[in-house]
Image 1 (cartoon, rainbow, N blue to C red):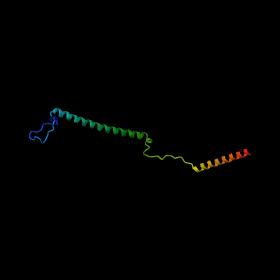
Image 2 (cartoon, rainbow, N blue to C red):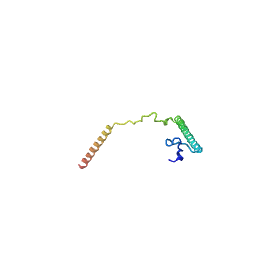
Image 3 (cartoon, rainbow, N blue to C red):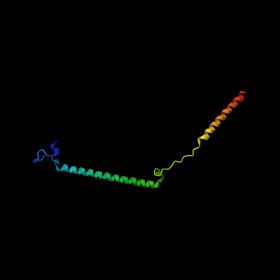
Image 4 (cartoon, rainbow, N blue to C red):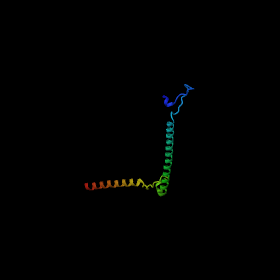
Length: 114
């Protein structure tokens, strides 16, 4: 690595440690300002998120007061099922009409034939 990035080696311990320190005060100040700005931005974003959540909750409460019927998932309603008619009478009517039609057709053929 470059010596500019890591700092100078201490003269009393030749190969045991490398000091990591900024070369000048200006770079340290820039680093501090950058870190502080990032922290301020993060704090602002957390506060904005909390404000957004509070706005959503107040809008939800207002909507609940204004339109309580929209909240249908809280009390599930049983669907109104139409009364079903039994299938057996319908099948019986079908068989009866088929039988009458067949008998009528047979009678008409027998009468016309002779």
